[in-house]
Image (cartoon, rainbow, N blue to C red; front, top):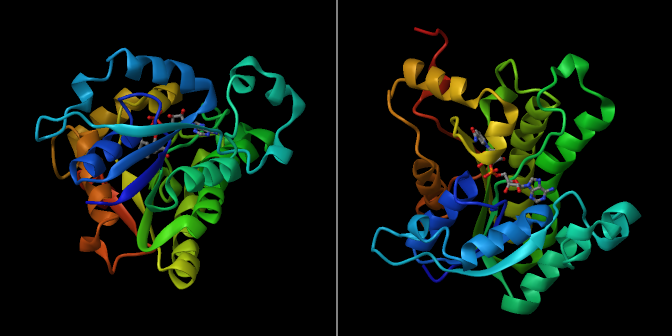
Length: 286
Ligand code: NAI
């Protein structure tokens, strides 16, 4: 409690980012979110009109407050990186200061510092293509949006993170075991994210006393996952084969994230932590 969190990758009330925001709010943290620019309008409108009020409910009956929503596009580090066609795009021209560097500067101007940084975003334009058929640009786009985006966020937010703070990201087991269908370089992007978690834990630990961990989450029918096309099958597979035969709730990932960024986890850094009903331990479908 008394902590301030910036959560990148919240654009509706279905995904892991929203669930992490709720778990942190329930623990008393102040919540700032970064929302992908093209999704900003509908997210803010829905928030304002009360569409999320039911899912804003916290265990004590109060509603989660989001102190501020920042437009963000985590594939651009600073204004100089933004191509003309994106600058001219109506959705992007409607807001400003949405590159990673500018968002970190704005958060600094608004609040001075944060304690918790959450990365809950991914994008792979060719995710439905097998890796063998993925283009160079599709592969690089997946790594840019899903892996480098974390490096960039930590790079720009670390100077305003209070020592003892922590960051967390979300990964998927397709990084280490083959999951046919998780294509377009997304499996590669998650492998990079997990490796970077270890290296960044060392660097951010030494530089700013900041912990860096990632949660390898089980399948959830989020908006992003539905775009991949086989999420219902993965949920069913997990239900049938995991040690714990129950639905995996976003809330359970939210709670694990809240633990990992809290002082209860003060000696845990550089880790990939499975929150998947134990599915990762199985070698044989039964
Ligand atoms: P989601 O759709 O709630 O979250 C993805 C978010 O990324 C969206 O809000 C989207 O607007 C945002 N985004 C995409 N490109 C962006 C960019 N360039 N800049 C800023 N924001 C951008 O879906 P979900 O599934 O909750 O995803 C959150 C994280 O969880 C991702 O890293 C995903 O890979 C990971 N994950 C999801 C699993 C699942 O089954 N849903 C399983 C394991 C990991």
